[in-house]
Length: 454
Ligand SMILES: NC(=O)c1ccc[n+]([C@@H]2O[C@H](COP(=O)([O-])OP(=O)(O)OC[C@H]3O[C@@H](n4cnc5c(N)ncnc54)[C@H](O)[C@@H]3O)[C@@H](O)[C@H]2O)c1
Image (cartoon, rainbow, N blue to C red):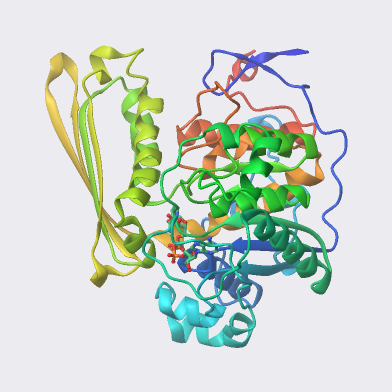
């Protein structure tokens, strides 16, 4: 049934009853949050959840914990918290499992990452963090060149994937989990293109058996998760669940998947600023972005092959927001460059500079300089939380396959084949909230507002 209102970009009608969940199962019992990679982002996330549970800090930046959602008309004054509107797992129900080739426990890894202040936020929860020890990782230095790990699985890729499946089952049983979700928080793997091995589940499984280099470790985790009915999100830019074989498998098994690359730092700023220039029809002749960062992620990205993966992910956003093919006078000649420089003294406290050359009326030039003294993992941690809770919600709602409504959280949103992604953060936010309204059978908000003037 076609509704008489319009979608976010105001040009296509919303079909509001297509595939609507008939039933959303309640969020009872424990939710296992499984994290391949237990470095800066993952430990900051886990420590923040425990900190919130113990009243040490608030979960700032998380929509599931802090954002409200308007229901009905502006005059209805009905704006519950999202967590009171949709049935989400509570923070108290989360239990954490992880894999990492580096055997450090959660406390050691968090201290090493240097994101959170030891005395204020790590020492008070030392016992809790120390008890989380990574399981043996499916890891190969062929995909992450700058790392060497001792806590690793052996055997063929297929055997490693089966071991990951057994890990998931054991973790859930030992921790009394009702359900689980997986969010990839591990290092960025080298750049891979989708190929024949990724086409169907048959070619994918045969490639795992044959130890084909086209199968990266992250794909083994994604495969294991989907096979176990565990929703999977990819927080890094590498090729993972965004291949036909795993997209089809996720759909067939009714398991939600999403990706990729957490939208933090400079790309977050880009997707906030660029829609603003575009809505005012201001031109852009160039956008030069450079970063210095000194954490392990920065070191991994110092490898040209891992950087290439990141670069592809970072460059796409502007093109999609600005649509140069539709606005050649404004964006047809734009020069876009992104640099990441590993600079150890900065640790996780990255600095990102943007020089933006814009032009206005009669082509007159102006410049904007952004200097973002950013804490990457502080911006990424609430994304991990929201993805875990929303993916679990999608799973309980029977929404299998790609969850495009979670584009809000990603630099390179995964979409159906042939469909261009929405990068504009405001469209993404609107899409996310309208999806929640739609899931709950509430009317969608269009911001049309003519009814107030009848
Ligand atoms: N911090 C951010 O804002 C941000 C934003 C977007 C994306 N990311 C991505 O998130 C990921 C994590 O970032 P981080 O800052 O925590 O990095 P990090 O280097 O601190 O942690 C990554 C961890 O993954 C582990 N690892 C590598 N390969 C693995 C494998 N196959 N299995 C299990 N563990 C593995 C490493 O040993 C390391 O401990 C990176 O890929 C990064 O590019 C981070």
